[in-house]
Image (cartoon, rainbow over all chains, first blue to last red; front, side, top):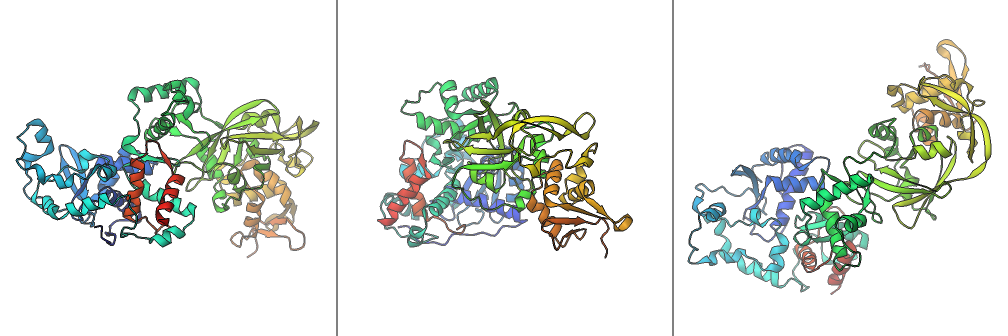
Length: 566
Length: 40
């Protein structure tokens, strides 16, 4: 009979991160050995733990995690026992959260490795081992690495509890599909039944991801050992095909073109899952950049999507403020976003992953997904191009990159565009409103001279006048140099520089004060860096920026005084 | 929600379903199966 028992919760030492890592690994090991006796050792080689950890924390490879895991687990000798055998490190713990007791005199003549090398006669009563052989139903389900995990411990210590345990394990397996078991639950059945589908799904996802024997890709699950494997040759051919085509490809193209599968084949869906799952384990060579509706794969060496004028990490830092303005994306009635292009967006061919776009675009499909490659179609110019959606990270905002050529061929800063989701969440339409030719002298960056200039420009797209950077509006921008990076990294300093460039000066010397309107500030500040009106308002109104102030009588008129009076 | 976990028996039941499925199952499939089991 399964008995109710409180989950063991050992205490770990170290920093918060180290404790979290130790806790996660302990959970994984406990899950792996959930049917083991409470004091029986659950072993796993360090390499397997590192691979498991890397699969959930993709910021480092398994090799890199290995040393860290070794160090952290070794800091907790009360919980984890570190063993070295035949040049590899193995960690052991028990379900009760205590390190298993080391054998004082290891019995060497019965190690598995030795028995393979020097076969010895079978023991007369092999039934000693029988209790550990659980019925297939449950046994196979729970053990991913049989060789490493269930090596029978031929020691008195490990064998001791066995005579008492079998009955419990057998019964547990037999009652498997039958309901009305006694719950060893951390949450009651009533509580569980009261949860909505989304909450239940979240719990299932989290619990199954803890289990090393379960394969997961996106929203699909399967036992790992039942997922067909890809040979090294197949992986190599997939990589070569991606490089040959020079662009990310969908799982279906790879299945059909590289692995030669027919979509009507009975095992097509199984192989599709296998391809996605197996590629997701090859962190070094393949990267998932797809969406649920368009599962694209990329490999190192493909042409980069996005501008070469500025590093992706720098653009991400420019958009860092979006993290502070992150709102819960609200799905609009229509899957369309209207947007007015700023100079910065036009110059680098980017768009912000703000709340509006977050509601339109798909969230990451995998927990550690860095980017998604989306297909953009322009029905007006018959173009189709790839755009990379970089998801936000801890200290960088998200953005879309890859519009540089499209913007420069068809639009000007200030243009009004619409982006609409198609039936597939990986494909979008980009459109603008065509108008008869307009001639204006518009701001451009002369990259050779490193200066802003106004050049006569003819454009054929509808614009929003308050974002149009014409010479009539901002004559003083001519021949100005772009701000230095250290200035434009800081929104407050950028705003101060913008006041000095376009504001109306009042007074002189130390008491000089600049006045500007919000529309003008937004248009010009966005030449240097992304800076929406909300951000400008917040900077100006913040008590920590006494150099800025708001006009008490006129809405959206602001002041900047370089040396504010105390 | 982060403190809520499935009991061993529910988890083992889900693993049983996965082991006996020749095709990958979706999270929705598992939610449905668990609900059905809870309602019995």
